[in-house]
Structure formats: C-alpha cells, structure tokens
Image 1 (spheres, rainbow, N blue to C red):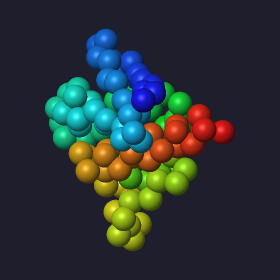
Image 2: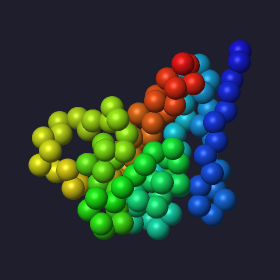
Image 3: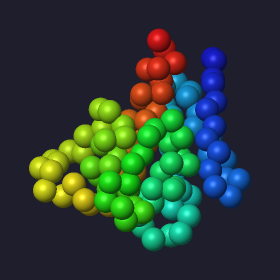
Image 4: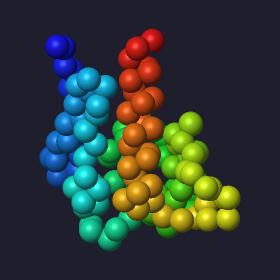
Amino acid sequence: MKTSMLAFHLAGGLMCAMTFAQDTPVIPEFAAIDKDKDGALSITEARLLFPSLVITDVEMDGLLSKKEAELALPGLVYSNDNHEDDNTIVGPEEYALMAEQYLLAAQEETAN
C-alpha cells in the first residue's frame, strides 16, 4: 500500500508529520501546537502550522478567533455557529476542526 507523508515545520524545530495512510490523516495534538500553553491558538502559532493560509489578525489581539480562521480557510464553518461568538478564540476543539478542514483542502488540491 502506498503511503505519502506531509510534514509541517513548526517553531522551535518541532516537526509534525501528518500521514495520509488509508485516507486517515494524523493531526498533531493541540498541546504540541500551543507553544505558550495558554489554551488558545495564537496568530503566530496558526501561521506556522498552516503556512499556505493568509491569516489576518482582524481583532489585533494576537489570538486566532473563529471569524479569522473562517476568513483564512474557505469552507471552514463551525457547527452551531450563530455568528454571535465570532470573536471566540480558537482552542483545542476549534483547532481540530480547522486542521481537519486544512488537510481535506490539501488532499483535494493534490488530487487535482
């Protein structure tokens, strides 16, 4: 069976391998991504993890909000999102959904 590897270089030399084996990617744990251990994904952490995305700090607070994540990644929509909480910071659950959507977009791009 053919397996391909996609690696992202993160701050501090951390390498996270995302394996595409049998269409089951491995997403790095949030704890490994959250360098400052504040429970939120910063703009800097997000830019390092998702290098192909243009992530703009609309809120000018240094933290990635759900709205900023949705603007950076077309197709990303948080469930039960009534847009009243657009300024909610991306934490572990939101990160997982964003990483999954990012991997899907990367797979679709390589398939074309």
